[in-house]
Amino acid sequence: MIDSFIKAVEAEPGMTYGRLLSAIRARIRDGHGDRRLRGRLGSFVRRIIMSSREILEPQLCSSEMFDIYRKPFLL
Image (cartoon, rainbow, N blue to C red; front, side, top):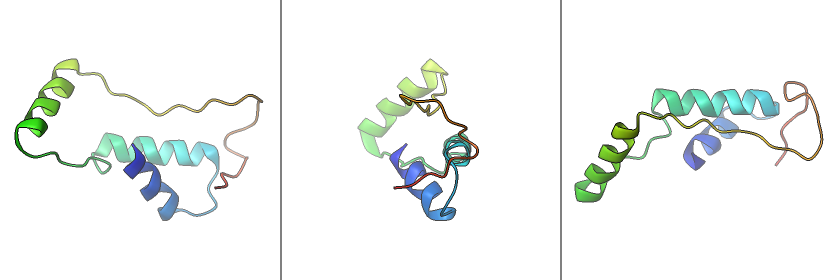
């Protein structure tokens, strides 16, 4: 998740919150944010992930309402 976030921010400076979420989700779905674990630990983690068949999606929460496709994301 963190790797996908960093790559999305680096790829498109000055993006909106909505575009950031879309970019992170796309990277995760395409497998680009995936760090390959090797050995027994990697095998165990892949088995758990594959058995759950659940894809997690990043979400956004805020204490105030705003249009995520208009408000720029700022670090």
